[in-house]
Length: 429
Ligand SMILES: Nc1nc2c(ncn2[C@@H]2O[C@H](COP(=O)(O)OP(=O)(O)OP(=O)(O)O)[C@@H](O)[C@H]2O)c(=O)[nH]1
Image 1 (cartoon, rainbow, N blue to C red):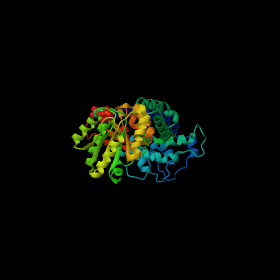
Image 2: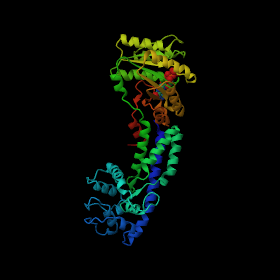
Image 3: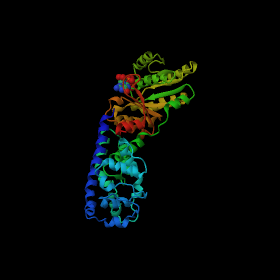
Image 4: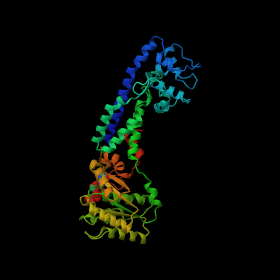
């Protein structure tokens, strides 16, 4: 699921990491030259407050001096990050933990801790009165260098952001959504201080994770809780064009509810299309569910109404009503759904489309929502979609959450949409 997009996002994070670390290594050579003479650079000397109790280790005096100047804790126990941080990742992560006054964590959590520490220290590292050289004073930069930290500048990122934009658009992410993600990444990442070589990857991934989560997590609500708490019968009406998996999704939801102890009745409100009754009847038979149908061409509202009456009379918990999806006659669609709304007042209207339709699905979601407001969406055929563009875009474009993903042709191939899980699967935990 979404493997093409995963690869592209992982390409972005590793490219930024590689590039920014390379620049940090190049920049590192300059302060080293000063240190070789045993002299603290003038900028640092004026900027730094000596920590009187800092005890540099033997033979490491040049690096230990600036490191100690950054040690606000006064413990004097921090190893020289300037010397070891750029070379030895684990040493850097350990020193980050020491800064926090914590025990050295296990190997897996070291880089995360380092990223946190660096994020925490970003405000400390802000220049106060240093001269401005495009946003950050030279003295502040030198100070960061000396402590094994460096800052990510916007110009370091621009070409990568361009690549990311291309990657998102070519994965069918809607333009405004791609822009929102890019803005978020830029905002989250630029100006970040980070510990050299140990935390860039985490910072980039976290920045991307946060921006993706923000666009995906729009309008989420607890579907199960809403259904459980609503007065019964709960009526859910499904909209969307034909052929995308709407009927199958209704059947999958009937099974989903049964697994949660809720009974269902199906209603075929798609009275427009020949064969629609038979199609839904087949699913009802497979799942041993009651189905309400009327003749082709009859009033869809009457079908759903009858299903609601049946549910009331038989203590059925949920009515699942299909409708005909004809976007090209959006007036008809509107009139049909308005009539259902007026007469039946469904608890929810869910839009169904296929993830594999990419931009088309996103556009249809917008149009359906404009024509008759939806409460949420189901994206089918996510199992066959390498792109992920619709899954990322639909919620942001409609302002309504994706509630389920269809992940196969079997009745239990329906997964609740969990934004956090989706983002983790796209970026890695
Ligand atoms: N791989 C995969 N196939 C699916 C999924 N959902 C539905 N399908 C298949 O998509 C095809 C169309 O599904 P239907 O449920 O018939 O689609 P529909 O929207 O009701 O279309 P009409 O019946 O023409 O209105 C069927 O072969 C389904 O088995 C899914 O999540 N993954």
